[in-house]
Image 1 (tube, rainbow, N blue to C red):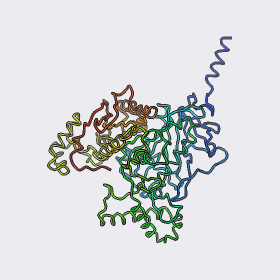
Image 2: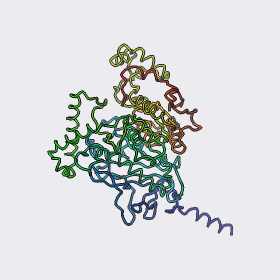
Image 3: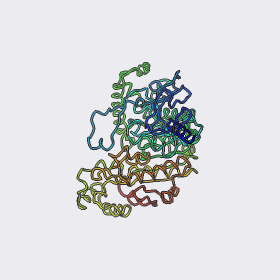
Image 4: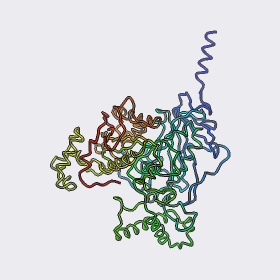
Length: 545
């Protein structure tokens, strides 16, 4: 009898425990896929994903559809079950990648995807579906400015590990970019009223889809955090001031997101729209013909039009950003009615907690020469004098006080000022509202390639997403990297769950105010400091994004 019971018990334990109504499978197989695996009902129809190491994964789900230069609408419904196991199309790029620098590509390891204007897709990772649990939802917005990138561009974007670690639902989004997302044709008919901001309208549509559908994927539609890096951080900042996005998310994280402090005036974007029509030899009465212009021709016309208007603005003495005229959100009076600095804009997200920061070296590290580690103090000082002139000695003293552990002369050369200043400006604006603000600075230095890439732009993403193993070329895959990723990803998870990034693995993390300058420095030894680099930022050109 005892033997029979043991045999039955062993047989039961050997059976897979997966069911479409649960979200997990206890099995030795890392991949579980099949016609009845991970099937979830959405408003538009059923989708089928797969399970990888216990995490339920869906890719390429349509969250909206859109005609060129028009606002997004709900996606078409389908019958049966839609296979959703691989990434969907990415937005076409105005400047497609046809060559790369070998060394930096080794570090970043891009996945360019395949382009199509029908690119309104999202991806989901969850530890359970159809289980009525209410997990925090984290919606990742990719970088690439407002012109490039995708939800699959970097290996660090993969959501499996952070989903598994924090029992959160991770969503990533593709949407329209560049000329497809920001060409202002509003002067040519009501159908194009929103054309100057369709890129951001797509993101609102994605958040609306999340609100309507994410419960079936194990997520809580009333606890959504939007977060993004670089251009993705700028998109987060824009959504904070977008009336139609209010209530669709409840917390926000901006990582190295300099964009979003200023929306383009419509007087400028309408000029670009007119210039594009001129380049395409289209009369206003025939504006609808632009729907059929091949993307490559459209992109070329867009680049010429932007250059033309930029030169006109220079001649007229009009101010431009440090990067010149770009495809960015437009102050159109309706979808985006206020500049971010307007108190009316701030009131839209007054109740949304914010976590914001940047990396110590950002793009500066990529400007260094391969042998910069061998520079002498005299050589480094000569290089600094070209930028700081008679303030060079004061700058060196300020850097050494801010970062006393830095010992190499080259460490003086590549401390970012632009993204750090922009983060402080955004944080200072946000502290006028009652919701808390938390500031961080990622200072950890990568050992890869003799340490030349330091805390370069994007370096913090593998730590945030707990993806050190996927990004060994960038992080080195060392024990210290894993240890810091454990702490940093836990902060992001805790913030998504509670609105506070502090946890037992870190020193006490105070709320940021302009008076205290409280900033958590993420490094081998995490520490909170207060205005530690104020003197550094006060010296030299006051450039921010």
